[in-house]
Every structure is written in C-alpha cells, then in structure tokens.
Length: 81
Image (cartoon, rainbow, N blue to C red; front, side):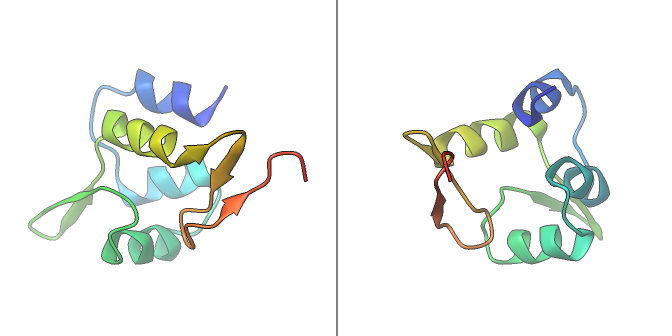
C-alpha cells in the first residue's frame, strides 16, 4: 500500500513516530524536517501532530514529473535511477 493511500485513509492526526515509520526514517529526522518547515505540522502544547491529508497533499505537490523530492533536501530524486 502506498504512503499516500495510508495517509488518506487516516481519520486522526498522526504523531512524529507514526510519520517516521511511514517514511522509514528516525523520529529525530521528522522533528528536524518539521523545525525547518519542510513538513507541515502543528504543535499542541508539547505535542506535535501532523494532519495526514495535509501531509498527503504536501507529498503530491512536491512530486515533480516522475521524480520525487527528498523531504530533507528538497532535491528531486529520479524515479528511474
């Protein structure tokens, strides 16, 4: 199942751990991307939450003509490489 499908099926906000598992990266990587403004998120007191639909839309916008951008660098990765 694709990441986008998993995100669109979610009905509640996701935590950092859940997003890290989806992207197969560490929680600290997700937190760093959020601090840099590279992933849309909201902070409620000491808790970070990510709206799964907003995140899915963000992923789609960052996809460019068959290549996907790396969330950490913004660089386009060639899907055919």
